Length: 395
Image 1: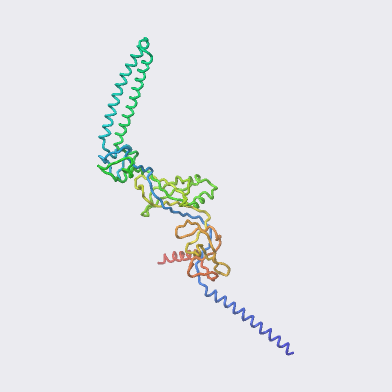
Image 2: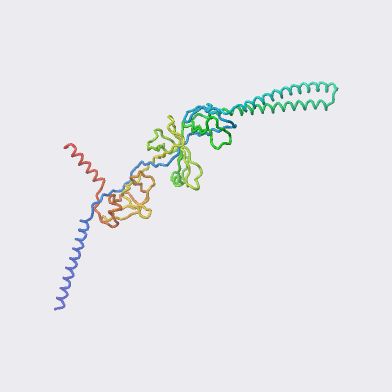
C-alpha cells in the first residue's frame, strides 16, 4: 500500500514539473518576442530599372594634325595665333625663301640651257641623217649624232625634274593648313629655325567639328555585352543607346554621342579594349585634350533591386539579412551587378521574389538568428503619406 502511494506521488510531482517547464518556456518565448525590435523590411520583387555606368574618357578632335616643315629654314612670318580657327589651305607660317628662290632660278637656267643644247643636237642629228641617206657619211658618224640627241633629251628631262623639285621646295616654305580646324600651341616664332627633323611640331590643327571620346571596356564588360560571345560585338555596338558626356565640371554636354568602334585588341597590361564614341561639336566647345566621363544608360527588365543600406560586407562578399521562420534573421550571401547609382544594388543571385529582407540597422544593430518584428517599409511609407494628405486640408 505504501508503494502505491509513493508511485502516485511521484507521478503527480513529474506532471507539476512538466507543466512548470512548459509554462516557463512559453513565457520565455513571449518575453523574447516582446523584447524583439521593430525593424523596417522590404519584400523582394522583380521590377524594371534604368541605370547608367560612367567611364573616364579623353577627348580628341576628329583630326589632330601636327604641322611640320618639309624644308629647313628660319621662320620669317607667323600668320596665325593660338586658338584661331583656320580653313583648309590657309597660310600658317612662312620660312626664309631666299635660298629656295635661288635654287628655282638656277634650275630654270639649267632647263633653258638644256633646251638650247637639245635644239642644237636635233639640228646636227637631222643633218647627219640627210648625209647618211646620201651615203656621204658612215653609219657610225650618224649614230653618234643620234646618241648626242638622246643625251640632250635626257639632260633636259633631268633639268626639268630639278626645276620641279626646286619649285616644290620653294612652295614648302609657305606652310598651309591641311584641313579646317583650330590652331593649337605655337612654340616657335619669327626667327626660330625650323626643320623636318625637329622633335616638336610647329603647331597642331585640330578639326573639332566632331570629336572622339576614348574610353575603355574591360574584358568582362565585352563578354557581358556579347552575352559570352553568343552575339557579335558589331551587332551589339549598333544596338547600343546614345551615350552622354559628363564634362570635368560635372555638367552634361548637350549633344548625345554614339559608340562607333571597339578596338580588336585587349591590352595585355590593362586587360581592357579601347572604345571610341563620336560626338558632334557644333559650337566648338569641346577641344582636344579635354577629359570627362562617358555615361552609358542601361535598362534591365525583371531585376531584383535592393537598397545598398540593406547589405553588409564580409570577406569581400555581400550579405543581407533575410527574415526567416519565427522572424529570425538569416545571413544570406548575394552577388550584385557592378552597375549601380550609389543608392541601390541590382542582385544577380542569392535572393528570390517574395523574400523579406531587413533594410534597417544592418551592420551595427542586427545579427544572425536575431528575432525581430518586421515592419513593411513600403506600407509604412504609404500610410504616412495618407495621413499627411488627410491632415493637409485640416491645416
